[in-house]
Amino acid sequence: MADDFDPAPPASASPLIGPDELAADLERLTVLDVRYLMGGPPGRELHEAGHVPGAAYVDLDADLAAPPGAGGRHPLPGPAAFEAAMRRAGVSRTRPVVVYDDWQGRAAARAWWLLRFHGHRDVRVLDGGWSAWQGAGHPVETGEVRPEPGDFTVAATPQMPVVEADDVLGVDVLVDARAAERFAGETEPVDPVAGHIPGAVNVPTTENLDERGRFRAPAELRAAYARVGVDGSRSVAAYCGSGVTATHDVLAMEVAGIRAALYPGSWSGWITDTSRPIETGR
Image (tube, rainbow, N blue to C red):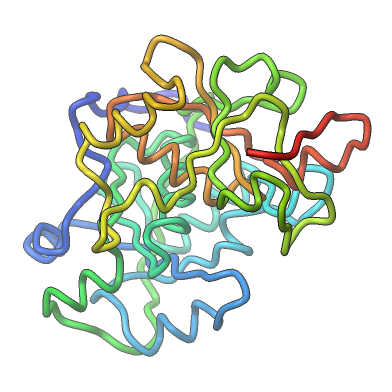
């Protein structure tokens, strides 16, 4: 693994890009289509039916996660596996990357986070995703995309913070990104145990977005997270059901200028050890 990566982009650089900006700069960007919806149609079929011109399809389950197990339903992929997947998708170390989905950024945020975690210095999420691209009237390409292999190499050390199960309870502000009813333990449609990690606060991913499905302005996001105690001076980490949609909260905090850690195992990993405490209620 390489250890000579450029430093991370400045805090003022937005991790988001709009559809018009993407269209204007498409030729110099590597675009990844990460369409995924739990229980929905296969993303590859959606990709081949229509995508941003030149965008390579990235499979969340196969490329952005390891097999389910003690680490939860979507453990982080191993560095070598992730590196290989990104090279197949045409990702290079020096070429900027834009990722998108049609799930209001929840799957794209996972790709954004993993690329940043492994050292890529210029990765952005298409704000509004595939719907925004189509709504803006930009060109659509169909069929399979087979990009030239990239030369992406993972960094020797992680470039984004993580927290593991043994340290989660010591985080000052632990943010749960799931819907309020799942956080409260009132319903649990996916995992075998309902509830949340003790002491966690709830900021559902829907609160990161405006009525158009775009990310709220930085000041609005700072205010939203300040309401649960995130002020930039205390340690903060995010989790969800399996470590995917929590990256949406991490991304929202990044937009707000706050660096947050990810608990990759999230709720599905937490409950694999029955000795770990759980809470219910709002």
